[in-house]
Image (cartoon, rainbow, N blue to C red; front, side):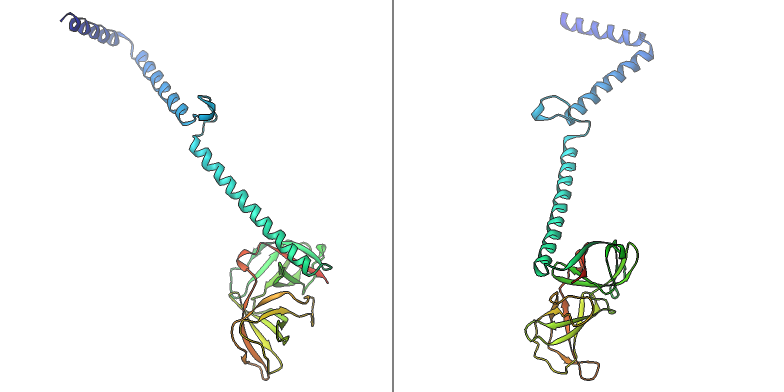
Length: 255
């Protein structure tokens, strides 16, 4: 009974004191409690198990880990791209050890997939010439059609304005590859007869122009049939270049 009386008396005294205290003092007291609570939350968010209670950053650990993983993924992507570019250069130099080449970056491309054009960051100051072949590793990806001081325009191999001298891999039959858009082309055989088969690989021919012999163009998807021009045969070709990943290309300046 005496304990209850004492507790009641203490509560009465506290209530009287809080009633007597100025409102500003109570507000400061509440603000102090809120600040202490906020500090505890921040400490909990930035707690590092390896370093005990030492604060490492004002950013939560989960956010730091997520940012670190994102950075690592970007670095992995950059490394993979550099490996791919090095592999393409190595393939090309093994195939053509004496050819003079220039690496160029694609800085713009047309939105029209049926007539694709690309702009690269190299021009005549870098030795680029009109008619030069544009390669992706050992595969031809296009042809240079206009050269400026520091930039050039190239047409992709599937551009209808491109005509590439070619030959069939096994039959050795001569032909030309004309772009059809959408990563496709047409092989035009001018002899009126050929023994080229479905699945045969088609390569560039150095019969004319500034395109070297032996760059891979694509694969015949059907047997040659009578062409639009008299005395010709035509067959569809799936072009080998990976146009979706064209970022850097090889410009063949001299061979």
